[in-house]
Length: 305
Image 1 (spheres, helix red, strand yellow):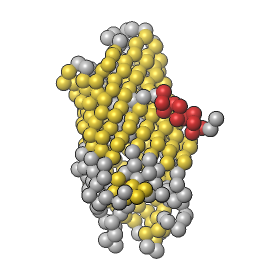
Image 2 (cartoon, rainbow, N blue to C red):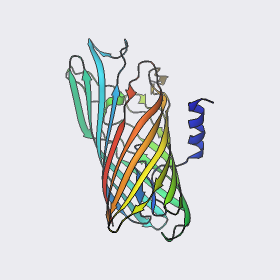
Image 3 (cartoon, rainbow, N blue to C red):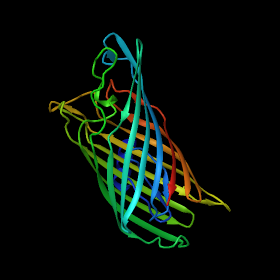
Image 4 (cartoon, helix red, strand yellow):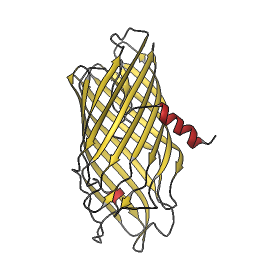
């Protein structure tokens, strides 16, 4: 059986995206791996930094005029919050600021600005983690969200050529998501599974990003000291991207799938927690001219209240 079919099976088994469960659970952070987040029923205000880079292959398609495209780098700083209007309902808001840089043989282009704001909510179907002293506990949450087209999506390079849709800081269209989260904890060990699906609409330039699907499974262990707690975690993610469409025609150089190994560490200091993680690609199935992704880095700091 191929790795792709194994990962697709995991994708079906693991179901979820943003949320919290027992005294720890996962949060995919609008598509980015965000670590294992604590304290069910606690409000959170945080900042998340993510870095992604992509190396372009040397093909006849990876040119901007006479300048060959070498590398794209995407940096994002995201202010986010989780709030509880009801004990069973948690509401998320994500406000991203993005800076994208493209390296070419003849020029270097950087664009930046506010990205697409995301609002989402989750409902707790069940949660047996009423006490952190319980030896076994589990929780299941489901939810959905909406992405608002607040980011710029028609920025140009120094030659006044509109940059590709995938490079823009915004999409120019609404998008909708579905997610669910299941967390099982046994003593100090835990398993968090996560699935996310995003459905994109067409923007005014008749461009429509392909729908996206992502699944993550993580194992974590909680280490306690007198004044702090550590939560190392390791897992695997699988992401699948449908082809984009322009003027109702599929674009052959888009779409694909990728599998990643996730390594993370969270540190809890009373009401503050820090998170750091890396995602290492282990399988990528991409079109001939599409750039391959390198290791992703994620950092976060948040306050619980």
